[in-house]
Length: 172
Image (tube, rainbow, N blue to C red; front, side):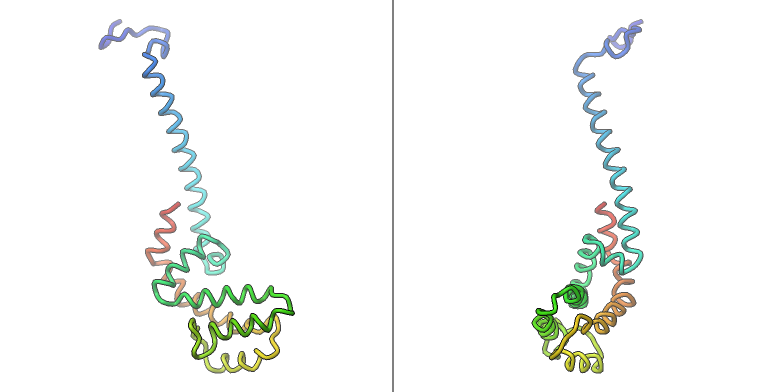
């Protein structure tokens, strides 16, 4: 039987020109890669969606933390995250270096003239000022918790509605 110049035979694909077979193989490879990418995207999107469910999960994710940092920077409140991260680092500091780091954190984030002053009440600031001379591993715990609560109640819900969160989800 003749069909548009091609003869249909029982031999199947072998009757097709080799250029068609090469194109078909190329398409099969591309489709395979597309299917792998789609599977990877689905897997990681679910992971990111899990990450953005709560602030703690977000802060434990490198990608989530970066997206949140960009959002906070856009709102001119990146110092909250930076303070929280500095406190996390401080908590694991060897005892011999606590005083140096405590003074640094106080000067960077707590002092009324600090370049990245965080929004803490005067009572918390005064307590920190008195502990700076003999700091312990938990010196900043209360202040860190206050800033975490501020981010969780204020910044994080806005982040979830922001284009930063949506773009991070789309990136996957």
